[in-house]
Amino acid sequence: MRTRRELLAQAERAWTRFLRSLVTGEAFFPLTVRIGKTRLAGDYAARKTELKVFDRDAAALGLTVHWAETGHRRFQIHELPTSAAWKNEAAYLQALDRTAAARAFREDLALLPPELRSWAAEHPLDVITHHGAWAKLLRCVSWFRKHPRSNLYLRQIPVDGIDTKFFEQHLGILDALLLHTTPRDVDVTAKRFELRHGLCWEQPLVRFRFLDPALQKSHGFSVADLAVPALTFRELSFHGANAIVTENLRNFLALPPLCNSIGIFGSGDAAALLSDAPWLAQSRILYWGDLDARGFAILARLRASYSKAESVMMDLATLELHRGFAVKVARYQRQIPTLTPEENAALQRLASEGLWLEQERVPFSHAKEMFERIISSNKAPLAS
Image (cartoon, rainbow, N blue to C red; front, side, top):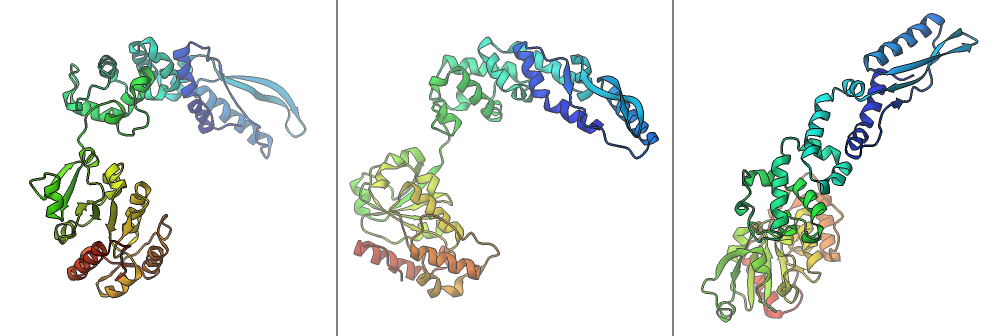
């Protein structure tokens, strides 16, 4: 036999279906609940107490219970509950303490245009979650429908009574509404809201340095060290140049002069910053990261975009040569895809000994010599 908590759990599970019925107009009541098998009490007095508790709990929850006489070899003839149901909305909502929530849902539902009714039926909890914001949300939807893919920043969108913070706090629900109402205007392949809906956005900057004055001059740049938006960086045309990527700012600034090369500051997330750059796909990419799991993980993500990306000083030879500069760490990720056998051997050694060798701990004289040898040889990076 169900306890009060179990009866309430059944009511809770029906909540979404109830809200959906308010949208579709489908009949919902009476809402019948399962009573389940009664437990066999040890004696007749305990049996009576058990049934009395159920009757009290059901009444407190507004359930209408039907009883029927039954016979039992131990308890003789007595009454058992055969069914229980909430007969109407008022009783059901009172049991859940959701009368106000249902009223708010109806108020919001009345605001929605016909084309969003089917969406509301599929996502009734989203309607409730954004109670109080629907008038503004619908004004935003209306503006986007009239000005698809406007190429504006969120800050520039002129919707009466809507500020930038409102947009930023409601991007998820706005995306869902626009995908439902104007699917042809949404780029479903993009993840970021602005890209999905044809807006400008504050792109991260990619900082890079010309390591070869001749390369700088040939491309008409007046400065050697600059930062540009990520999308602009991807549209550059340094085809065939050597791209040396490092996560550490000091190492980036200290990269030596190298023929036909540029240095790129990964800033801890080179894989995301540098993805989808056609010119990089046609260039030699050298990645210099920390000798630890994170460094190898960034390398693996970079290879997801550029499979030929090579690592520099991320091997056992570098670890052994500079072991005295390594520090201890507690945990290690051992399985990272796309590593070469040499890189994986270094990772496993680092993991087994719990070591971390940062880029900037490698003596600069050694790093300078390594890059000069690699670039001058135009062959695969040397170990040491």
